[in-house]
Image (tube, rainbow, N blue to C red; front, side):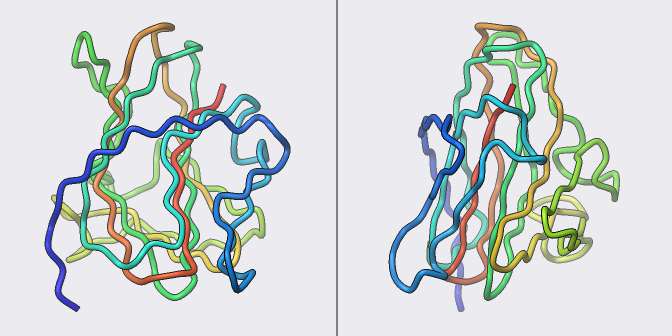
Length: 188
């Protein structure tokens, strides 16, 4: 398969305040991903910034979403499900729009660990790794996730200024088609 690098800007804001949020529907039923929110991988009040569902394979694509802070302590969470293959995320950034200060740590995974990210899989299976080599968008490492059937999560606590806008950006690769889902959430 031949990939071309592209730049894609999405500005989606969704609110998920019910106990269950289905992000994809269709047939067969296995193509649908149901996120039970909140869960032990998120905080209570959730704002969904971006949701991709059952997309075709794509090479590294740049995403940028604006988020206005509603609390000083805010958790950013990335949710992954990819049954036939894997997702790769790299060069994650959360920047204050006024000062330009980066508030997320190790967004390029060059520390060769998840820290200070936390990994959460509600089934207790670890199928995500910081991966060296040719999977990274830049540098030597990226985060690779190949979770089948149900989503797993990586998250990081951020200290934000209430009312300020923050640019959440990252490079994302989807190695194969459906069934798959990817979501970015902020929770307080």
